[in-house]
Length: 355
Ligand code: ATP
Image 1 (cartoon, helix red, strand yellow):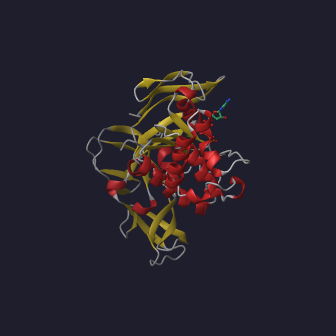
Image 2 (spheres, rainbow, N blue to C red):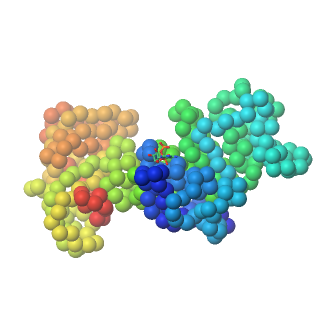
């Protein structure tokens, strides 16, 4: 079992708290992404799991064993860094097998395991080539080879694709996920790139300023963000936010937005009159004559099969995704409606999702 469980994990550097009371569970065999903007504490969390950084407080369980105070070498994990340093004077075979050599594994066994890793990564034909002449994609594969040859129970990866250009990154996303499906090893993957996380992860933990704001599948993170931060961080173009003042009675199925009324699924809890924020993704905005929100077309951005239409309203600029065939004239008066079942409502002060 290679489940990873983190409980109330905290890390301070002097007076600065980089990770605050983080708890999550990575199930055995799961591909788990730590996602968030630069400086939110992803790398620090990963380094604590790896044993490269000691937690200030909290517990880390690897397969049931509490390891928070154990050394990295006592944990059955492999760390893949962004800036993978390959040994430039060694060929591919030696680079991949080096850690096994250091562990004193017999030469024949090293040979078998290196060739198996190379076959999985489809770099068997490069084994006797120097690493200096390799493309960055192949160098990345060699770096991965060095991790998988050890057959660890867990992989920890810190932005391993960060240095690659877009095209290669997209190819490597599919390759990494495919590799994961073949090996089935528990993987924790750090990225600030939502597309990488959405494409690869079984589960995502979204972090903000040291706090884990939500842990869920990519679909739930996208459809039911737990906070304003998560809603804003995920999605491109981002979710529209309409600030309003209002109250919700339990079971209420519409909200009053100025003169208009917006339908929504029944509220689970009552909310006293307060500052709220309605959240709606561009693809859930519909143009309709009787729309609750009135506005004027500001411009449209052509994206091929769809276009993003920007509309000025009393609630600020709203963006709607429309079929590219629909014609919009700048300045044209339009009404906007929202798909009720897709709406989010947040408490402005706490940022917490009310529904
Ligand atoms: P990035 O993608 O930029 O690495 P991150 O989310 O991985 O961001 P961390 O590297 O975990 O963020 O850093 C979290 C915060 O802790 C940052 O503000 C960083 O400056 C600070 N920090 C990290 N390591 C140390 C350290 N050894 N000493 C002091 N502060 C540190």
